[in-house]
Image 1: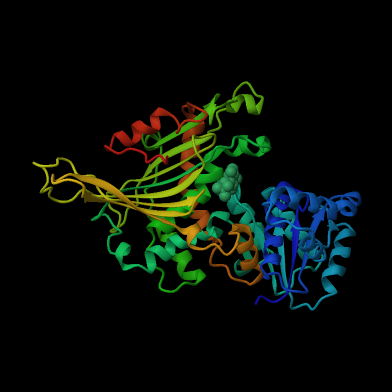
Image 2: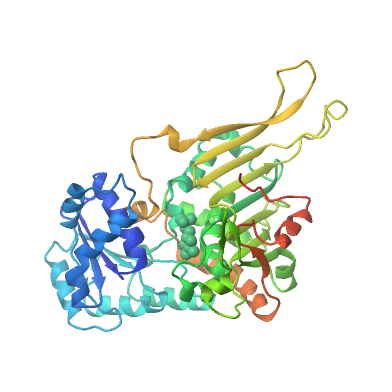
Amino acid sequence: MLNPFDIIIFGGGGDLALRKLLPAMYRAYQEGNLPEGSRILPTVREETQRAEYIETAHKALKEFLAKDEFNAKDWKAFATFLVPVVSNVTAPDDNWDVLKGILDEHDSTKSRVFYLSLPPAVYGTCCEILSVKNLITPTSRVVVEKPIGYCGESAEAINGKIAEYFSEEQIFRIDHYLGKETVQNLMALRFSNSLFENMWDAKSIDNIQISISETVGLETRAGFYDKAGALRDMVQNHLLQLLCLVAMESPHKLNANSIRNEKLKVLEALRPLIGSDVDKNIIRGQYVPGDLNGKIVPGYLEELNEGSSKTETFVGIRAHIDNWRWAGVPFYLRTGKRMAKRCAEIVVQYKKVSHNVYEDSVGEIEPNRLVIRLQPEETIQLTLMSKRLDNLEMQLEPVTMNIELSQAYSNGFHSDAYKRLMLDAAANNPSLFIHRDEVRQAWKWIDPIIDRWQEKGKPALYRAGSWGPEDADELLAENNHVWFNTG
Ligand code: BG6
C-alpha cells in the first residue's frame, strides 16, 4: 500500500480538476487506494471560492462520476481528505505562507505532489514561487499537463524553467493516454505473447493504423483549441505516444528508463516531413455542419463564432519509421473531432499470404488483421480466413475472434487514467510519464508541419458525423490501402 501523500492541485476550480482529478481521487478512495493521512489540497483564487469549495466538489462528483459510483457515505468520508486553499499562482503573496504552514504540519518526508492544472505559460512562475517560498522538499514532485508549449522552442523554454527548480526525476509530464489500462495492455500483448512479437515487423505487416476519433466538438475550450488545433492537442502527444508503444523494441526491463529510451528511439527514427512532404503525406481538415447520429450539429466556425479560422480539427498522416524493423511499412495516424464514432484503436494489417493456393477456386484471400480497441469498448479482434463448414464447396471467408476484455473482468473496478497516474506520481513511479527528451523529439517532428501549414494551404472541409475529409481516403488509396472504420 502506498504511503500517505499530499497532492496540491493548482487550478482546483478548473475544468480538468473538477471533471477528472477529483473523480480520480474519489475512485482511489473507494478502492482503498487513498491512504489515511493523505490530503488533497485544491487551490482557488478567492477566499469565497475556498469557502464554497466542498460544495463545488460535491456537485462536480455527482455530475462527473457514474451513477453507481457516487454515494453519500463515501462522499462524506472522501470530503475529509479535501483541504481547499487560496493561491495566486502568479504572485508570491501571503497565501503561499498559509499553504506552507498546512503542508509543514506533516512530516517533511511525506510525498508532496504539486499538480499544475494551469496554463503552461504560468508553469515557470508557479515553480519559481514554490521554490522562493521554500515549499519544495526532496520528496516533492511536480506534475505538468500536455501540451507543453506551442512549438519546440516554447516547450524548451517551459521545460527549462521548471528544471531550474525541480530535477528531471521530480518532473512528471502527464499524457493521460499512457494511464489508460488498455494502453498498458498494448505492451502486455506485445511483450508477454510470443505469438505477436514474432510477427511484428516489416516482413509480416503491411501497414498499421492508429486512430482516435471523437464525436465531441469544441466543448467549452474554444480559446485553447483554436490556438492549438488537433496536431498540437492530439498528435504531438497521444498519437505519437501510442505510435511509440506500437513500434518500439522491447525494453530490457519494465522500468521508466528502459521504456522511455525505447520510445525515444522510435521518435528519432520517424522520417521527418518537411516542406512539400507535408503536403504529400498529411491531410488536415475542419468540420462543417453535418448529421451526427441523427442530429444536425454546427460546424467548427459556427461553434467558434468566428468568420474564419484555419485551425485543423482533423489530421490524417502517413508516416514512416526508418529502422530495420519497420522499413517500408506505412503508419497511418488519424484523429478528428465530430467524427462518425468515438473510438480509439490500433489496426495491424498483415500482409497477404505469399502464394495463394486458392486462387483458382476461391480467388482473393483477405489478409489477417489485428484490431486493438482502446475505447469505448476494450477489445482485441483477430480476423482469420476460414472455410465455411456448411457446404461441400471450398468457400473461404474472414471470421473474427473477439476478446471483450471488459467482460472478462467485472469486479466493479473503474479504469481511470488520471487515478492511475496521480497515484503513480505519489508513489514516485515515472514509467508512464514522459521524459523531457521525448517532448523535445516529438516537437522536432511536429514543428516543420506547423511551419508548412502557416505558409501554405488550408484545411479540407468534412461533414460533422463523417470519417473526415475525402482527401484522407485518397492519401491511403495512393498505397492501395483503406482506413479501417469501426462499425
Ligand atoms: C485531451 C484533449 O488531451 O484528450 C482533448 O485535449 C480530447 O481535446 C481528449 O478530447 C480525449 O481524451 P479521451 O480520453 O476522452 O479519449
